[in-house]
Image (cartoon, rainbow, N blue to C red; front, side, top):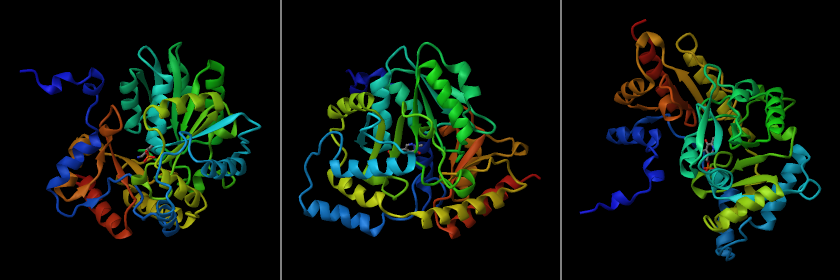
Length: 385
Ligand code: PMP
């Protein structure tokens, strides 16, 4: 008899279960692991933001909203863009689309711009949705190998652009490396994309988590300083601990954003309504103390691995991408297995890359857990030295 799974599309079958999930399955045997694998802040949603969502539900904001998102949230986003980048939505012909998470913005980008025969350039290492988005849309993922310093520069991108390239997907601060590109590097990428007629998409979900040494004159470096002909994807998940609330936004030339809104109309419909109302409060919430806390955790990680393992200093996000010392003769996956045997959960680089030479540590946890976990990892790395 025919199995229902025989009916699965090749698109679906071509997707590998995310490497992260595989590790979580391996870890189900652990009772109280030291978890350095989570891609979300360890702080809860700020109280006023929670209250705003509760108030919105009580006030009856429970129906569909406009596909592009409620006007009140657009106004706050517009004010932020004006202040940060001097982007003026009306003057500059820009549009905003409130999405279901930054993931929603990414999937809509893939669906709006790419199909079979197209190419999309993504970094390697990458955030897991980037190659999956290519598979789902039928596009060919063209990997920009950024080892060993993890900088996706114009020089590395230039030879990869072809007639078929639709967009370059940039992620700074980056997951899984925490690398922050400089304004100069970003300017070169903007020039390259403009010259070659490809869209630049900038996934800036970690914008707020840019530490002082990654900032320039106090500002987070973004390609949006140099052009408005690009697509900016931002989110609420990381900055306000709202990962389960599913909201982000896309900003770019109005025609492009309208095209994405059309795709949203027939898929996600709109971002959750009460979350949109709470988003207004979120964007007015100061999270500098959280960021300062994560900066000190970052220092803990860097200090722990000094002289033990190669690590390119992360200047943003809350991850460190650490090379498994060569003397161990282990792949990232093998190292992670031995860490799990010692009750510490981290993710192998292979979940984010075609290589399996590193591990990703998330330091979004308490200092105590981080210290314990780092001790285990460092001891494992020192074996045989
Ligand atoms: N982009 C990057 C680089 C990420 O790390 C994540 C979450 N891990 C996302 C996008 C998606 O975030 P969300 O959909 O929760 O906004």
